[in-house]
Image (cartoon, rainbow, N blue to C red; front, top):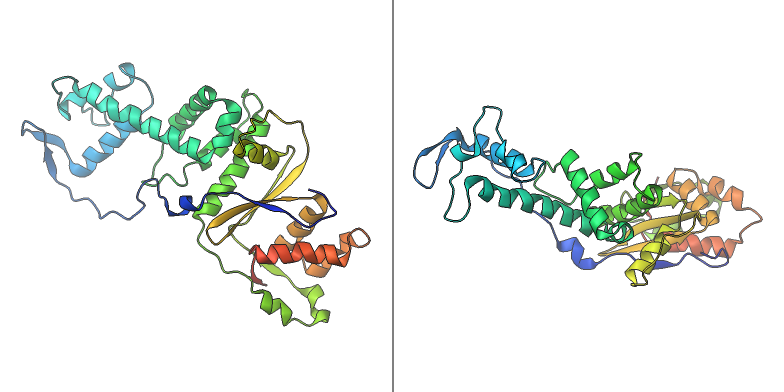
Amino acid sequence: MSTTSGPLAEEGGNTELLATERVSASRVAPLQATRTRTRQGAAAPLPLAELQAWFFEAVSAPGTLPAGLRSLRTATGVPVEAVLTGGPALSARDRLGVYHFAYRARLIDALADDFPAVRYAMGAPAFARFADRVITRHPSRTPNLNRYGAVFVEALSTPSRLPHRAFLLDLARLEWALVEAIHAPPPPRLDPAELGRIPPEGWGELRFVPNPALRILASRWPVNRYLSAWRREQEPTLPARERSATVVYRVDFTLWRMDLSPMTHGLLQALLDGESLGSALAPLEGRAGADRVMEWFSAWVRGGFFARLA
């Protein structure tokens, strides 16, 4: 971003995503211990709660058919055939395998939804292989997949031989910041009129409480430029190193991304870290005029960067 102009923002998300839950997150009533029956009417060997736990472990277990599920047992040694029945075309193991592979495919799809630019940068086959390793090490443990992508970022944070891992990690952090902003509750926003009631001599002591959904991502690569090019279907290639900073925020039901120059990054970060306005502005003395600073600050207030005055 040019340091001669105010901050520019571009739309960073789809409003429809805000109304979408991958899986219901509603609370479920406690299960009652009971006994279920197979299709033939024989009593199943496990109470319902244990049967559900068995089924989850079977579905989420790593491995491929036939080896992975053929040796499947629970802690009490109950085999697949003692719990499930076969059908005209599929054995009990093969029927369970349908759910096993569908589970993993759904988690890979969820990760691809969260990190589409990372998937493009890695290539679809490599992304699927990496996601499969992530799922094996970190199976989902909740009925809602909206937060599951955090384990993908964590996996990229672990040193490995993955090509261009550092760039992919910063790109994933940017995409994950968008996901977090999507699902963050609407925060309170500082009313510009409140600032208008502050006398001029009091502005230097102002401190601001940041919007909890706001994210600033500093990177050694121009990840927001890469993401923007990918969204415009420009088929970007791996960029050269170039330091960048991007702020992700939400206005009503729309996500935005704003590139920050080193000057605006330093000022905004200081304010979000709790420094007074006067202290945060001190390093800019002689480098930026009051009109430019006010332009930046006004854009941040309009964007809801600050929840309230401290």
